[in-house]
Image (cartoon, rainbow, N blue to C red):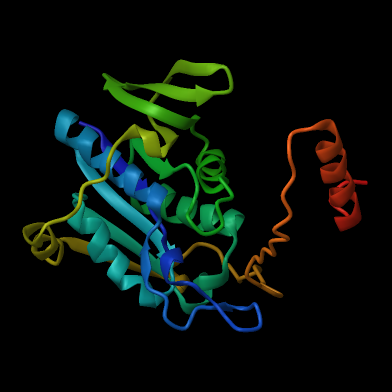
Length: 254
């Protein structure tokens, strides 16, 4: 029976971001959520456990304020959670996130399979999963659409440019999953109540083997803007030439 680790991130819910009067982004009323792609990862981990047995441990790195994310994650089916937290972890970048995860998973958690989302809803760098696999020295299968456990092997269907590729790897292995792999469950009241009784292992910055200082800095952030010229063009050759000329005047074409 496999030990499954699923990684998730607690991110800002983009639906609550507002545009200020001068073009800046207003985060004063934002709410938070588990990254959309990580919901698929959690669902897949729980599905595989229900089919093959074993246990699911959910792992996240973040600031101490991200405790709500633990309850949300556990209400979706994992057996326990590991919360690697420090106030400075709010501004770490993907290479540091993967290093911290590797530090904890490699030394404190038994694993046969690690599942990550394709990317996060905020930065969407698509780096944490592959970097984590590299640090742990295990195979990585990315962009997975379907996942099956066959004995001591993982069989995965992954999306590539020309179609779908079927590949296999011996466990331990890490996979990153696409949103198409499943439909995440919506936790009910009973699931939420049960989540509060599950084990959460808190890991502080001082418990890590190395020191990780935040290096990600945001120098500016403004909302995208769009101005409509409300100029109509037909399909005749003269109209198309006029359209191209208008784009050249705007600096879009050169």
